[in-house]
Length: 313
Length: 281
Image 1 (tube, rainbow over the protein chains, first blue to last red):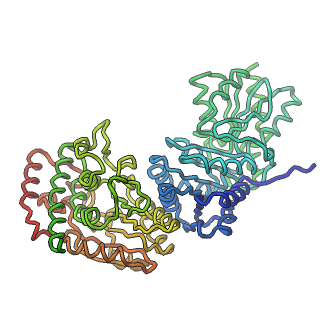
Image 2 (cartoon, each protein chain N blue to C red):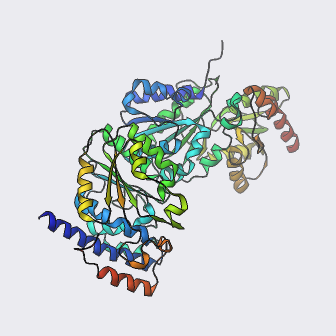
Image 3 (cartoon, rainbow over the protein chains, first blue to last red):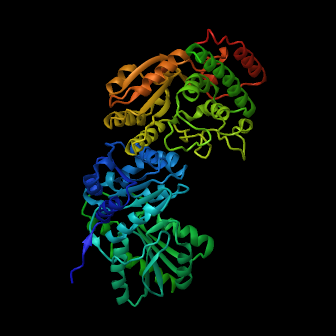
């Protein structure tokens, strides 16, 4: 059977449209990227509830906050990196006031590829994670993205949802029960645990195949909610393995790796490796080439896992 | 009440509230007197004459909204809200103090506050969102927002200006408190914002230009602005004087964000007391 593929942004667009049909309070805003973020599906069906904000991200976030203050449920989408343009608006107008704004940043990470450094957000998780009241989510496939969109409609408070450009395998079925703040163990193991988020969930699952041939038993956990982090699961699996790897298409500073390290350094220090961008920007290229060059592909992950497991032994 | 009586009453309110502004900043030994004094006449026009509000029901869905984008002028809105009964006057004594309600810059948790300001250039976008939501819900209300002239140096003000005209928001009324001075000097010398009448007209807005300390002009402008429904947002350019009413604070950037000392406080209160409201403008 051929594996079905779809991008998380596709899930976003699809779910937003469906949500619009059942919830009249949902409004959508975009900054001239609605074709890329897929908010155009909603825009076409509900032109009265879609607001074109032009290439003006600060104004979009400020207006979204005004909608939230008025009892609407605004989803504001653009590229992850450009949402950062409005960071101080998010800080002072959204998170400071705990307003119910759903920020959706697409084309995150170096997987964005050919567009190069300017479009490859590798610091957004760190930025949003540092804001009090902010929930930070990164679905790993289109089904999970749909679940996130629906779940957020019932969740009151500021959130940032990180999405991706490229199709990835759909690993969830529609009966998947998604819960904000709960990590998902995709694979049971013994020797080491990989906490992965977003696109690197798939690379980590591929790495498992390589590692199994080396007789290394790996837990793979999908961390779709980076904040609030599922700390009990992180500590539990750290205790079981004494060997922790994090994997993300993001700078190793401030992202999932930092979040996990913060918890473990206080609660259960153990050996750990953070896989991600090593505090540098990438470049133009095909996503898979970039993942290989910058150490985010399955082979690189497997290599790092082997190193850390040997260290433990 | 005749129009003349109304104007005199509003002027009397403004005079009393000027004293309360100075007193609360003096008590806190912290705060922004200059911009609060330039804005207060317009705030009186809004809260004692124009706004459709209910202090007993601050979040009434059909109320007119007021967004104070220049949040550092919090004393001016706090004295108005306290006087209107949104919260006890006693709270004014706790301004800028720990464990008290009235924060240095407004927070949404304070009854009557429709925008948490403090970071310039953000209120207009927020007001835009509210105005779009009110229109979507077919609410018969207006959204007012006050911005500063120094604040107009923020690019986001113009993003919001463009968007409000694009979205044809004739339920949005902006007041530019053009008090000519900002933190480190005259606005003309820090970053001249140029001809704001032409700029806002070019951005697609109705423009009303008034003396923002002259109560008859304020009342007239608010009446006009709230009634124009021509698919365009309206701005009232309120020409004011920073520190108005206290001679040594007038157009003096040193009193942008500085509290008066004992001597200055005494002198300021004496000067405000001496204001002849019949001649004040």
